[in-house]
Image (tube, rainbow over all chains, first blue to last red; front, side, top):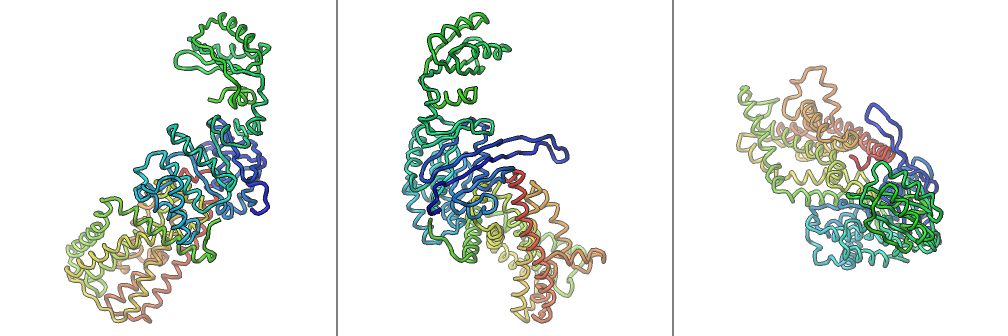
Length: 331
Length: 273
């Protein structure tokens, strides 16, 4: 790790899952098509993308839980396939979801056990367990069984577990998913405080979180990196653009594609996406000239016909970057 | 980076002991487990004691029926605890939702599997005590002429059971239905190892298979050393036979664990287990 500028290198990672049952194979599912990125040391790097984009599969390959079908990756300078044990020593991972801790054990017993699995000595386990529980505010609940913890407390304990052996690199997979807003803010603060001592790879589908925490972001869609840069660089791609969100009373059933094509052909429109909702449809349009786009779109919608429920104009965000590069909205 | 063990052997032992401690803590969280484990072997003993009585047998291979069954049920507990702990280790982790957390650590998988076996053996210790008491009450007679022989036979039985647990740990993971495969293999293993029946009653064509089960000769050695006063020298061949078979099963298990982890990561099935 000494003198290394990059904490993580990933080059042309690809992961394919065979489809089918025991006796019959029915083609392949491409979870990650071609993903390359580099995480500079001492920074938070974000993998941003919608559900199913390939973020979790990518971090499973980086954390040695999956072997890539093609491509290669190094973590702390170690190859994730050939030097997997060394990778695991230098890595702390928080996997998304509610599981990964022993519910019948206390927080302290969980940390003690995982400390042993990371090869820590008894003294270092005792010292770090106390320090880490204090850091995340769980000292008073240290001897309670984890099954009685709230989701936010479990997530803080996951972070503690990942930090216990003081790894130089951390991978956090959707760490704030399912948390209430206050708990999410607390956890984001804790993540921000990890750098520059640790290098962090964060996966998220929360634009605001990525914008707030990451020095650099790779936007992932359908198993590929579709844009990469600092949040400011990414947003500059849509500078001058505005997002217009129109909600209609009608679902545009059967005609959504036709409407999408018609709006997409309008001159000031950069990209458009139509999403059906419970009662009506949601049209998200990224455009350069708001007034003209609104005029043209509203008159076009009257022809179908579609009556307007609400119209909102929004400043550009990372979501607009995604809309611009992926050609569809984030959800 | 934090201080870690420089000696891999010390790290292995620490992982093994930590896993067995965690196993005991988790097991003792369930009241039904506290009740069930001591009672199960007692019921098994009682059932077989009544069966032998009904068949009119007062002794088996020169020993009292109770003494014969005491050693047999002791072997059965050791064997079962290893199969359902070591063999089942990764399945337990999957059920708990911690298999990914475990495989993310650099810990020796063998140490974890062995830790499950050790934890389960300790968990069953109260059952051994209760069983010994019941055997005494029902007329078991012991003749320990050479305590080191009894000790060597006991150790070889534990090693044999652990070896079986290791060998099955990979197989169980691959099956993705560990409990079904464990159940299927349980009865033939009991039969072939002569835990509850005399080996001499097995048909001749089954005897070679019986010898390939690591616990078989360990149970023979234990019976001879604690019930018939056999010396270390006279049970030496049985103990060595058991240890040799155990080594083969250990090696198969270790290779199996490695292959299974690789295959699981290659096919993306690790967390589906």
